[in-house]
Every structure is written in C-alpha cells, then in structure tokens.
Image 1 (tube, helix red, strand yellow):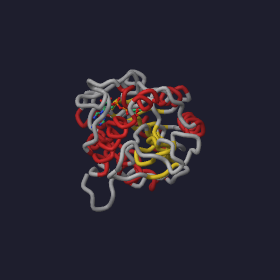
Image 2 (tube, rainbow, N blue to C red; image 1 turned 180 degrees about the horizontal axis):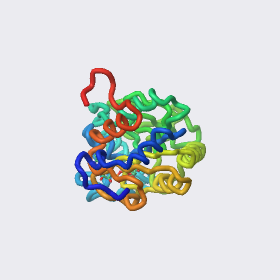
Image 3 (cartoon, rainbow, N blue to C red; image 1 turned 45 degrees about the vertical axis):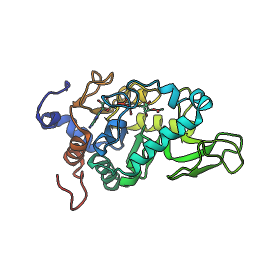
Image 4 (cartoon, protein in one colour; image 1 turned 60 degrees about the horizontal axis):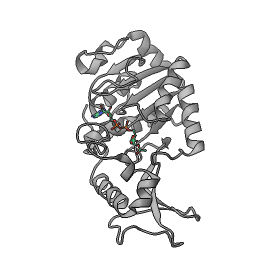
Length: 265
Ligand code: OAD
C-alpha cells in the first residue's frame, strides 16, 4: 500500500489482507523515537524546536564534548531530566504497554531510541533501550559502577564514589551500543511479522537499519510519523500524523487493545 494522505492518518484505508497478516503474526515489535514523546512535551532532536536545531550535538552528546566541558553536558542532562520528571506518558506509550499486556512478552518486544524512561513509566517491560537511560549515571573511570541519579544534582559535575567523574548512562555519538542489546534488537527485527516504526527520523544507525531487516524477511513495516523519512518509501504503510492519536487507534484496530480501562479513545 502506498503512503497515504487519507483521513485518520490512513488507518481507514488499510489493506484488509495486510490487516489479517498483522493480526496473525507470531511476533510483533515496535521501534520508537523522540516523536513518540512529543505529545508529552519532550522536544525531539531534529524537528522544529528540537535539541539539535542550532546546536552542535557533539558539544553535548559525545565523549569529546564531555571531556572538554563536563559541567555543560551535565547541566544539559539535568535540564532534560527536569522536563522528563515533570512529564507523563501519553497515549502512544500507553498503547504499547497495553499491547505487551495483551500479547504477552513472548510475542511483543519494544525497541526504543528514547532515553526518557516514559515507556517504562507507562508499563512496558520487555523493552530494549538502545541509547541508555537518562535517569542512570555511571562511572566514567575504571570502576564501571552504575546508579540512579535524581535532581537536584548538587556540585557539577557529579562524581562516582571512587572519585572519578560520573557521566549519564546514555550512548553518545561515536560510541558503540551495548552488544547484547543491539544483537537482541536485530534478532527481534528479523523475527517480527509486524514492526511499527513510530516517531523516528530513521537516520541514526544502527537503529535505522532495523526496519530494513524486518522488510527483507517479509515482515510488514508500518510507519507512524507526520513527516516522510528515509523509511517511508519502503514501508508497507505510512500513517501520517501524531503517534499519540494513531498508535492507540492502530493497536486497537489490529489487536483489539489500545487504551487502558477508563481512558477515552
Ligand atoms: P528525531 O528528532 O531525529 O526525529 C523525530 C521524528 O519524530 C521526526 O521524524 C518527526 O517527524 C517525528 N515526530 C514529531 N512529532 C511526532 C508525533 N507527535 N508523532 C509521531 N512522530 C512525530 O529523533 P530520533 O529519530 O528519535 O541519539 O533520533 C534518533 C537519535 O538521534 C536519538 O536517540 C538521539 C539523537 O541524536 C542520541 O542522542 C545518541
């Protein structure tokens, strides 16, 4: 099916054969990015008002940036943390948590590039956080200790108990992802009969390669994004719009569960 400009983001026009395939798929996965948290008030990276607009990402999210100004890096992470602490999961996060409850963890895996923790707060448990977790710090020295940090941070930059500098436990530009986690993500993408790709510009590797793997193995790739991305031309379906509206609608239509009791929609 071609990318749609239909009403309701194109949901009404889903090919019935594709709907049947999706309903019967043994393994279902989702890959999310910053756009899924946009309706929670968290800025994206590359969109209007995004973190990387007018900024060099390497000053804030690279080992070199951290080495040259750890205070600046930590104050940016503290700002992001304050925003996340004041935010709540939106219906896109909830729909994915409800889908996991409905299908069971053996049949559904959520892969996210987001570090904001909102999927976990919504209730997702079988979750691969490819880029780490904003709320966790780790020793930048040799001891490797990890811990949860909270605001206020106190003197910047914070230090590990061993005396070395602490750093956020996230993946920065130029760094490798956790080997086991990325292997699990590729296995999940290869096995998925359906992969929902939502709220990501699909430009940062290796996550950007996951939908290709699903497609090459014959899985159905469904994209949710108000804009077109490098994936759009290859996706079986492009639902054009806000994930907070389209994710619950899609999940309800395909698997009969998109919202929690008491929620509208
Ligand atoms: P981007 O900021 O690159 O892309 C966000 C995407 O979300 C865009 O394609 C938007 O069109 C889309 N979008 C915006 N609002 C939306 C909404 N309400 N519903 C659905 N989609 C919406 O963010 P990511 O693709 O997540 O990595 O970026 C990937 C990685 O690049 C991040 O994890 C981060 C960043 O640099 C690191 O920091 C390592």
